Amino acid sequence: MTTGEPVLELTSVRAGYGAIDVLHGVSLALDRGEVYALLGPNGAGKSTTLAVACGTIEPSSGGVALCGRDITGVAPDALARAGVCLIPEGRGIFPNLTVTENLRMASYTGTPARTVLDSAFSQFPRLAERRKQLAGTMSGGEQQMLAMARALATDPAVLLIDELSMGLAPIIVEELYEHVRRLARQGLTILIVEQFAHEILGVADRAGIMLHGRIVHTGAPADIAGELTSAYLGSESTATA
Image (tube, rainbow, N blue to C red; front, side, top):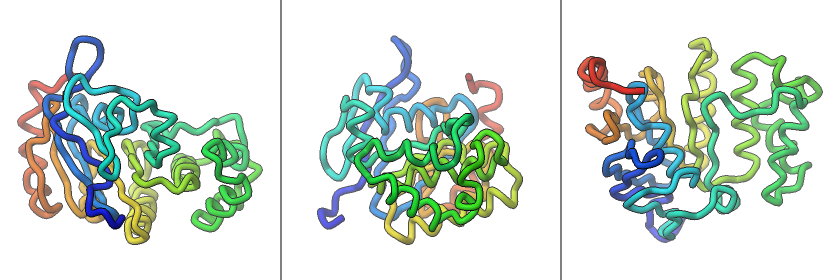
């Protein structure tokens, strides 16, 4: 980016489901190549924040901007084509399709299928070995790699990741976080939300703690690490699903 504008910016966002707001004035901004980790317990509003960023939930107030351009209320498919890409909790792959068939689905944005496959297999060689395998028969870590590869094939401006580590062994999580670190070094902006994942603080440039729909602490990962335990303990009696 050469404009100096944040790649992704949420400003005083209130949003939720029906008449009930889950987010209460959330603001954050990510620069090019930055990894921002948004941490917090279940029900804090982390996934809702991602839903607002990718357009699946429209704010009741506040705004969202991509590279300085207001995208509040823009449809999710238009945002995907503009470079906002979400890897949802649960990975969002098609279990009854092969690895190759899953990857070909990413060509809907206009990227040639051959380019999608070449990009995926070069970044994740293990997927090349599994190209004819049904995605649902792969390990959880391999499925997460497939989800990442499919997302990256669209050359996104910003990558949104919901619970990368969920259900995975620590050694696999470490490998996936190394991919996140490498992508950020290449200039990709990444917003990742996690529940109990101190490991992401070793990858993030900045981190925030979300409680009850508000970001209550923001700072360097080393500073946030010390706040995590007290934040979680303080929320246990009042956190909602």
